[in-house]
Image (cartoon, rainbow, N blue to C red; front, side, top):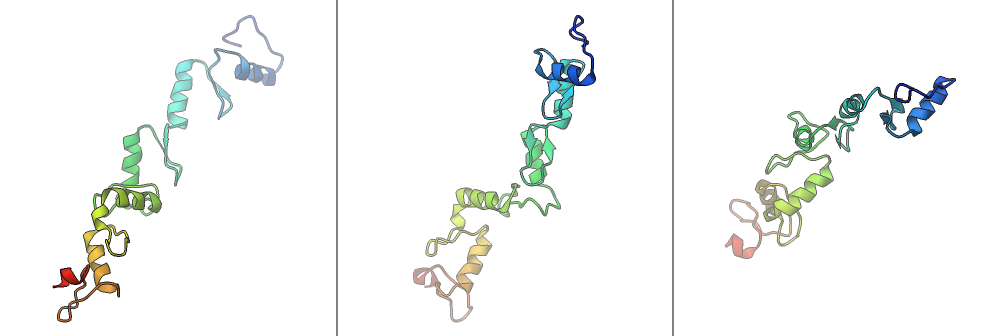
Length: 148
């Protein structure tokens, strides 16, 4: 062992076991690998074991902002983006939770149904049989008071 000059081992297996168990030996448990010093271990961890991992596609990133940039990717088909503010999310459910919490003005007060954009709620008023429509223009409204 390079760090324990007075220790000798008869096999690579015994040396490997020593590296895993002895204190002060730079060892990566997930990879089952020994490194020559702490700096080499830290470099390995930074490259191979990023702190921020996408739960959907398992891509790794070294900062929270890099992970958020990944979610907001331009041609992103895996991670939905909020149509109101553009924020990216790891899945549809997370985006819907965000929308309900931050864009609650897009909730139909009569039906309690959540929509992502004001345009979506306007379409809902027109399509739903639970909302009155103008007989001339066929536009839907929240209620009779809004229609008149």
